[in-house]
Each structure stands twice: as structure tokens, then as C-alpha cells.
Length: 246
Image (cartoon, rainbow, N blue to C red):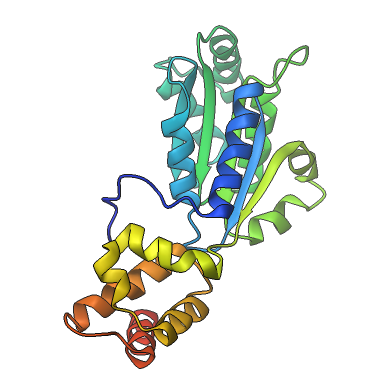
């Protein structure tokens, strides 16, 4: 998204329902959760909003994005997060981590954005470490966020034990058509939103498939290219074509 300086995300229905489901699950007990959606649907904004609204006196939040750590790299990352010395083997470091997690005064939330490239072995390691305390609840919560194909990977037999533990599973599909104008007012102000002709709004919604980031980028490009007057459907189509080429 081109402009990240927005004080609050727009509360579209998909987003609000997903936010409520995630917060309820995470506050109640350590949980596994899954967030799916196309690029631009608001997954990263959702993870950041969850983190911002959780009580930091109760939660220690570790956010990972665009990384592909191996199982050993993941264990090393957690050890470094808690300033633990690395042992000779991954198993020894993992045991030290488990002891630390058991005694944490806060609950660890591991939030992994763009999780679809993670290796199967790393996903398996995350589950094993979370469930290392066999007599109790998971040692930490895990939220995986990724593109829709992540679901197909988790349904594979070797990862199915992780899939079936994931509650809630939420999918961001974008804005409803009636949410488009309120969204543009939220992001562009009333004057900016009012410059789009009704047919231009239809084109903007249809060609972006209701995805908030794509809607905003296309609308902003239109306003920059046409600083005065009403914006027609053809102007929107041209702007979206340029974005697609870029």
C-alpha cells in the first residue's frame, strides 16, 4: 500500500469479523489461527491491529514476515528473542526454550505474515515446540497469515495435524460494494471520494475485486493524474492498467 500513514484501518465487515474472532481466541487461551486472503486484502493490517489491541502486559508478540527460516533457524530466532545462549544442538536449545516459555510472565504470540513460503519442516517444528509441554496447553499462540494456497499446503497429510488445530480460520475477501464509498471517504476524505463518477466507482470495484489496497492505490493514482474535475470510468480503467503493467 502506498500510504501507510492511516491512523485506523477501515472497519469493513470481513476485517471486523476476523479481528473479533482472532482476539477472542487468543485472549481465551493459547491458540493456533489461520488468516488467508489475496494480496491487498488486509492481512498484514489485521495482524498489526490484533497486536496493537492485545494487552502487552499479558502478551509478548513476535512478528515475522518475508522470512524462510529452517527449523534450526527458527529455534535460533526464538532463543535470540529471549536472550538465551545457543546450545550445541537444536534439541538442547529447544529444551532451554521450553523451560523459558513455561515460566514466561506473559503469553508468547508468534505472528507469521506471508507464511506460504515456509518450509514444511519449519511448520512442523513450530507445532512440536508449541506442544512440547505434553501435559498442558500449547506453550505459545501461533497465527499464520498467507495467500489462499497456504490452505492447500496445510491440508497435505504431513501438515494436517497443524491444520486441524487451527481455530479460528478466517479469510479476508475484501470490501462489499456498499462499503466502497465509505472506504474512499475514510482514505481520501469526502472531497476526494466525491470526485468519482458512479460508473467510475463500478469500474474501480470490479477491477480491483474489492481488495482494499488495490482500491486505494488505483483511486490515489486517478486523483494524482486528474487533479481537477470528475473522474470517469475510463480514467479509472487507465490508472488500473498502468498499475498492472508497473
